[in-house]
Length: 344
Ligand SMILES: *Cc1c(COP(=O)(O)O)cnc(C)c1O
Image (cartoon, rainbow, N blue to C red; front, side, top):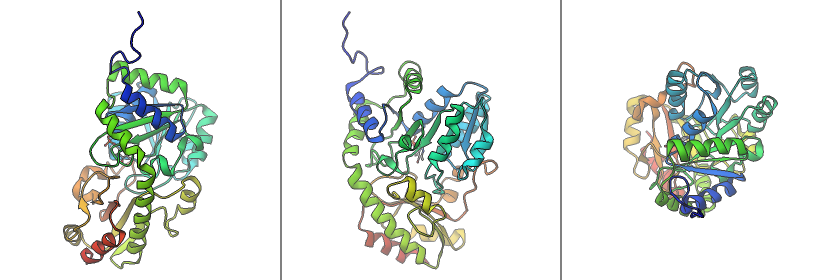
């Protein structure tokens, strides 16, 4: 029987196919899959490529959801062996992998510590053993970073953030050059897990993608203005923005990214009570856990979602007065003025 190419929407849908084609193109990959959330993309990747009792080496600075997935589900339920390493030094990854490692996982820049890892240097290690290397590139967006070109095998995005960009959809994407990886993930998604992005959300994300370059340029210019303002403020102890010359990994950022994106964090110099009063005094920045949308959002991981502080044993510690900022598309003078007024 000669059926329709898009016979049944879980397995194949024209709007999803169009979005996946666009996602593959913007990341410079051969294949893409659109998922119902960033976590659906990450969990499908990890659980499809790592068998029960398998071995994962992960960066110790990763999104809190990924950390819980690795510790609770991969290690806790599927009895995987998960090693967390400080991936800022590629030698730490090299020391943790062996020929039985099933996956190396990293995020760059990381949420919320803005740490970078050298994608090319880690890929050189994983290539030697033939281990798939996955990179969560959500903070950079496809506009500022091309992990596949640098040697990664798999790129993941939470499209909820910059790619959709309008805070009206949750979604995730996996892009890969590896046919074998693609076949396994596509089978998991389409046949077993059914965690694909709905056709209407695919339409929304495709619409968002059209303005990605314009938005990212503006996010970056605003973030730079805010980072430079904060760096000079005497109630700010430290600014974490890869675009600042003072940032310890600025050189690596300049080498492997074409821009520094719109996310930054800073350490407030004061007590938690003063910090809360400062956040309450803001008028342009809204407290919020998401990021990458048109409006500026601010989050204090220790106050707002204590869970984000993580287990603190194996993964990188987040300072108590760390403030994470998703710099939106407002007038940069209004953003700096809001901080000037609200900071004590
Ligand atoms: C938000 C986020 C995720 C999770 O994405 P969801 O769409 O919320 O499931 C994963 N990684 C990073 C870096 C994120 O910021």
